Length: 176
Image (cartoon, rainbow, N blue to C red; front, side, top):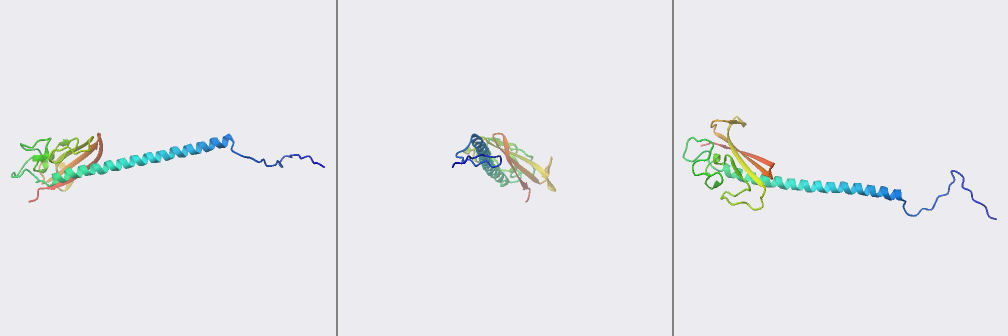
């Protein structure tokens, strides 16, 4: 004897499903797409951060190099007891080989950077160094003075393709 089967509400039999339907495929594709976009953004940001860190390290190297060079020189022109903040005769703005005191670096600007003997440093296209020198108040080194106070602040600004990367400062005193 054969019995007829009837599906009553609430007693539906389970269908034996194989494969995926289109809705599941679409949702899975959307999830994978969102994850891919997010991971590409992370990778892109990582590369940008690495580039910024490399630029900062390079800029600090360039700034410290010329700052150290300037601070090793005497406070004022050798043989003089007073002087202004300016280059003396024979000291050219575009060539540091004859610089013999700190204030010779005032308003010095170079792009690309050069060595002390005026040779262009390779691999620094687009980089610029600018140096300024000011007298400062010995009690407040951020306050500039129009007269000789016995302290000079040397400021080096380094830019890459016109964008400020770093600023370095050093001080030179007129100690005997």
